[in-house]
Amino acid sequence: MTTHEYTAGATPPLGAPRVRTEPAAVPAQAPAAAATKPGRDRYLDLLRSIALVRVVVYHLFGWAWLSILFPSMGVMFALAGSLMARSLSRPAWSVIRGRVRRLLPPLWAFSAVVLALMFAGGWNPAHDPDTGGGVWGVADVLNYIVPVGAPPYPAHAGSESGLLESSWAEQGAGPLWYLRAYLWFVVASPLLLWAFRRVPWATLLAPLALTAVIGTGLVTIPGETGNAVTDFAVYGGCWVLGFAHHEGVLVKVPRYLAISGSALVMAFALWWASGHLGSEGWDLNDIPLADALWSFGFVVILLQYSPSWKELPGRLARWDKLVTLSNNRAVTIYLWHNMVIMATVPILDRMYGLPFMDSDRAAAALDATYTLWTFVLVWPLIGLAILAFGWIEDIAAKRGPRLWPNGTKPKGGAPRGSHRAGTEAPSGDGHRV
Image 1 (tube, helix red, strand yellow):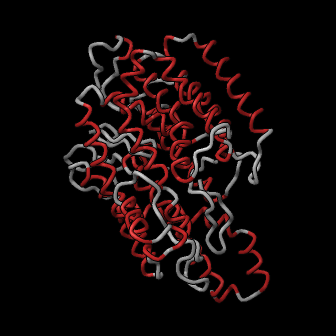
Image 2 (cartoon, one colour):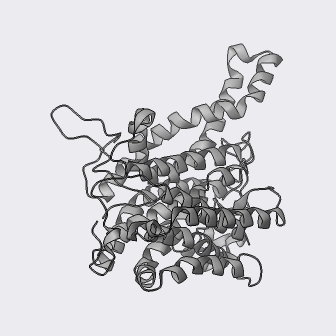
Image 3 (cartoon, one colour):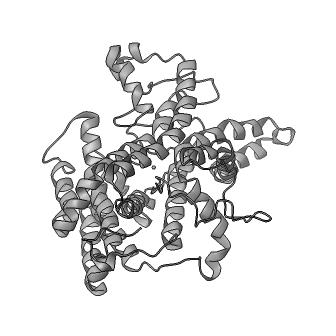
């Protein structure tokens, strides 16, 4: 059993590199140290932006070492857990309802496009043996509307001569595993936070213990149920670390103890990974226990050194608008980034037909730099996706739609998309409700 940043078994689009699939005040009983300063913490916003960029780069180049350099999934779940803990100062049901309300409309827009392309390619879930077919095959399509389970997709959609390689649907549906995990964490958070406030260390370490059981083969849960439980276990420790950050538990641990303990946990993660390398080598997304431990230790260190920034300091300030934009459109970026990566392929393939590409030397030069040009092209295409679909996040949040909410202050008004009034999205999620 593996834990991926995408669904298992995805194959890259034609011409693209192979990438694996793998996006307030506290209650009275909470300790005083848990009090949270008002406004947005730009350090956490910066971490979320870095995590998003890392996800895009990982799915573009497929570099296994990126899972070690910066474990984006663990970081994003930790940030989401911290924001969820803050929101749960209000009635739990209203918080869950608000989170779901702000998650689903962007998902519906994405699903409408993906399903339309699948159906246009001739897919019929009722007659697809790969998804079971029949009534249950059709019922599984509802996971594109509410992602409580694994969304189905055809093993082959379209044709090999089409704009996209025939297995593109696996890539298109890939990001939805994260939304499934996020949704279950949101639903479980009232109970998890209740347990954390009573037995914090047991609640914090329980997901790691569960991963040691189901993520190592000691106990095997088959099918997508097993994948969902494994995802919950692997990233549950990071989600609860978000609770610990918000509740002020981490700051009570001496820094030297937290850092040295994290280093030992991370060293064990690498040792375990060294004996369980898969086909992708040191990609921790294929090694659940190593992924859980490495992400846990990494997040502890990030949160131990967590400054409280109201503005990005020094040279980081130049990235303020992009950080604000990526946080305000995190759901959109995460949902659409892989479709955008695939869209670069037919665009770049058109370059071979340009007049100055007639020579073998020019074609060879493009072949050698194809992935680099994909990297260059993917960012403006993500910008187009933000313009086309990002405003749906505002509608879901019951705000006026904004095309480019990067914090720029319009004439005679408050900042549009200011990070003080922005959203925090499931790519680490944290929509305010």
